[in-house]
Length: 210
Image (cartoon, rainbow, N blue to C red; front, side, top):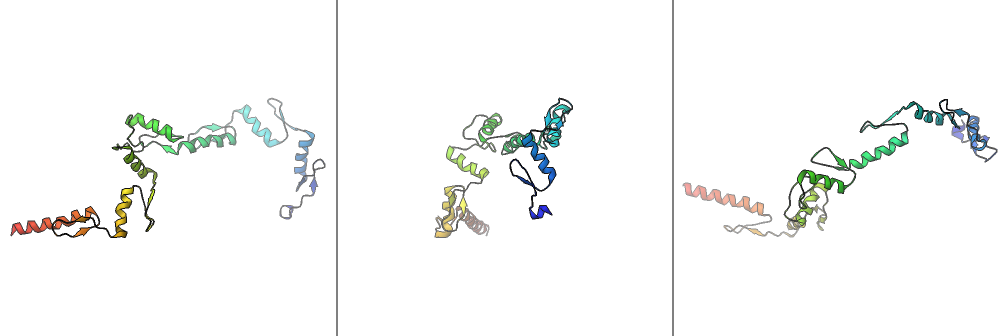
């Protein structure tokens, strides 16, 4: 019941710290007395607690009970495994699309990709696509990063390139800059004009076949 009530009737006469059970007080007192009742049978080193002795014994037995599930490397102590796992977490952030390798930072990934695609400052290190200039490469890289820095002030929709935003704005402004030279109907997008012109091509074909 003391766990629920919080009662700690066993008090250390040295520092006043309270304990729920007398056994815990006994263990604590070793801090003050310096008692180390648990001795290693291999080297004679003594320890305050049984658990500490058990951990120490691994040094002599060579046992490595903690295994990395990423690479299979084994460790004697759990803290060592935890520190090792951070390496995999960092590596997995920057993976090569050209092979199975991964890297801890962007610079090492870029250097590695050059071994696959060659030295080309205008080539995407994600997929190997070549661009005509740095501006186009910057826009292309956004297809991999998901960055969309150009936002429509009317509806909040975002775009990877400024030109795409400008084209989108025609929906809100009603601008129709593409006009058919045969019937003068205007369209918002050039693709719509091209489809429309196909209807004129069909008309000409029907007239010529009559």
